[in-house]
Length: 159
Image (cartoon, rainbow, N blue to C red; front, side, top):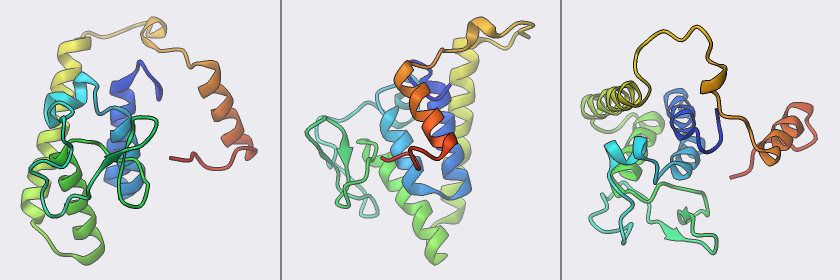
């Protein structure tokens, strides 16, 4: 559930990295789902200019040759300025203890609630006795990467 087309699972994966405080990993997962309806439902569509109206706390983003948005350190980031500003604000709060804790907590709750509502509307709330048909099968490439990471052969996921 960590590869397309299971973008909701990918979004949740990124959200969990955010909750654990791993902002770089979160940014990468958010970048991977930036065009998915579950993400754009809350953060908005991918802007034509990802730096328009960007908050001061948000890093600048530019497209690389593969069309992915990267920050000044070359790390993947979501192109939506509000999402970048939110993650940067959380990181500053985490590292320096400075920022609008109450506002960030409110935004965090709103994001999680929006994702839950999106998933409820897409998948429903009925009990599934057999969820085998709901799972997305991993591509061979993702399966190979996973096996390499578990075995230690491939090291950590590179973003």
